[in-house]
Length: 110
Image (cartoon, rainbow, N blue to C red; front, side):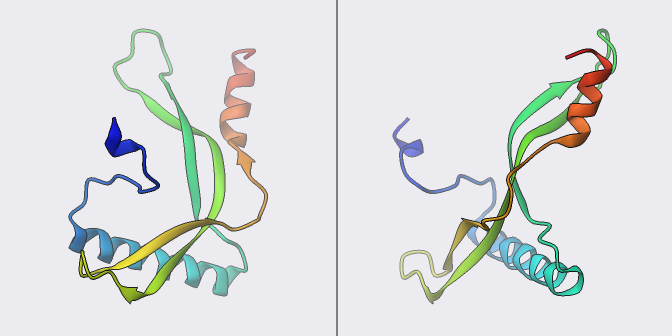
């Protein structure tokens, strides 16, 4: 669809809620780095849906790849939306696979 041909992330949040949520995530990520020296903010991509048994109705979702990111906020307010624009930026740290999922799959010889 045309709406998915741009560089914008789609969300289920209204602008006011999204702005507040992103600011909180950005603040908590910054605090984590200051306090522990470790970036704990990742963009998770590609999810595996799985269950413990074949006849289970309970499913888990596990990310396949985790990309360390930073969130940058524009200093200027977007005249169209009335809110600042945010950018998700690759931090340059190592991209990780899901180590826990890898070990779980080894149990099933996958």
